[in-house]
Length: 68
Image (cartoon, rainbow, N blue to C red; front, top):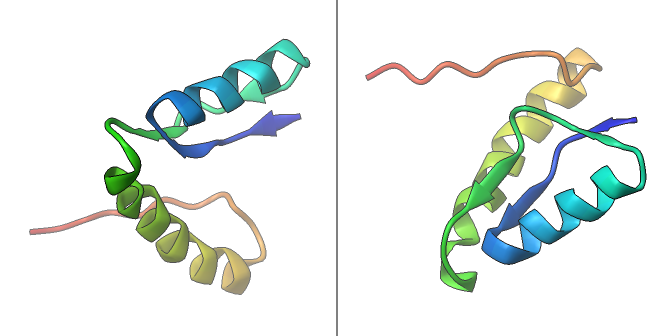
């Protein structure tokens, strides 16, 4: 199964590594925030940004573009 992992630092890398060992394909766009627990807000906000369109579109296959 192809998976993506939202995690911070060592925890995200450990989870992705274990899933890979179990035969899962870890997605190219897996998000890892560097640092300690104080950096967890980044991936947490990405998840909120992703959930609404995924629910509306009924597919996780979409992109988000940020324009300045």
